[in-house]
Image 1: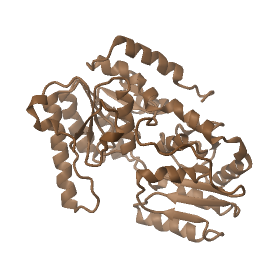
Image 2: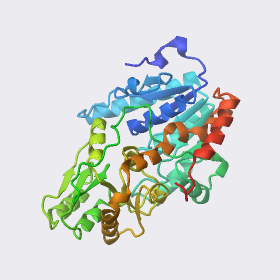
Image 3: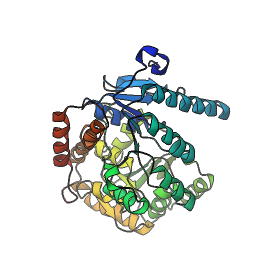
Image 4: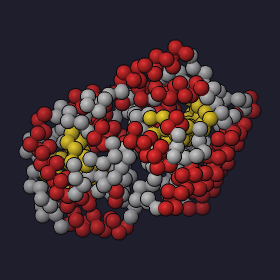
Amino acid sequence: MPENLASNPKRASRYRGVVLVSHGFQQDYERGFANGLALHHVPTRLIGSDESDPKALHPSVDLLNLRGSQRGGRSALAKALNLLRYHARLLVHVLRNRPSVVHVNGLMMYPVFMGILENWVLARCCGQLFVTVHNILPHDAHTRWNLWVHSLIYRIPHKLMVHTELMKGELVRRFRVPAGRVAVVEHGIDDLGPKRGSVLPSVSETPVIRVLFFGVVRQYKGLDLLLQAFGSLDASFRLTIVGMCKDPSYTAELQGLIDSDPIPGRIEWRNAFVEEDEIPGLFAKADVLALPYRHIDQSGVVFQALRHGVPIVATNVGSLDRYVTPEVGIIVERVDALAVAEGLKAFSRERDRFDRAAIAVVGCRYLWSATVKPLLALYRSAGVPLSDASVETSVVASEQARPSRASA
């Protein structure tokens, strides 16, 4: 287990680096982001758990286990006590070490406590507080309450980080956040963590189109639209759904659509959590990834597909069209079942023009080591020790590497 710095007085002094806090958000994301910073010699301390794998991290990343056990099957009381203990440890650690930057990368499951109260304390115990905004408002919960709460949340950090210009524009227009407080850092792909398998050709037979739907199943992701679309697709299409749905009523609706499919047996739903080492095989077997989203700001699943060289059929919502370019896949203009079906039919006709190795090359544009570059100057201005040369070189390289909308 990594050393607990908060209990070691010899190391309890001002920390001039970046403390990354994910609150348990996607291990591949927290790992990749930390590795990307470390490759630019940013002093980085990652707040992890028993599940964090130090072998998957850059050697210079300082892994600090404050979250403890994340084992499933614990009682609600055990989970609650562990959660309270974790947040207490986090606040004590930041108070004692006064880091130059605390960067919160995680989702705010309890927005009043974590988004407002805890962030307010963190902002006063460190040089600067950075918060990554993954979604402007919680999915399927665009209520007046959430609008008001998040308007308060966005006032607290010194800097907000988003993954798209579209998200920055919404923060500026809708929440009146000054543009200078918002940094755009595109979602990245980890190039140091566990390799998720080489880019492999699809194993499907020529006449078969194996469609993959991947990720936690929620209404905004439009799986019901995809299932309805399958009702108008012929027997050459197969669908594998990999992702858990925690909404019983939506689960029943989806299962009903599966049961009523005109071609029994061609739709498989793995309604369960998927281990990370299984992901390469799932993408290797897929001919195309379907993203029939009703709304989204951006999606990490896109970058899973890019890393594995899998073409994409996606609805034109959020910033998906920036990443699903003609060399990567097909954008569906309407958000309905008929349009999704037409997009999949178009892919079937054009599948030979999509080269999996070429798609993986596109993915290399979004390695975390490239996408984090706009942060370096901001971190240095907050007191993180970075050389002038490295920051200036990184800023120039970042602008050169960022693909335009026309060329992406």
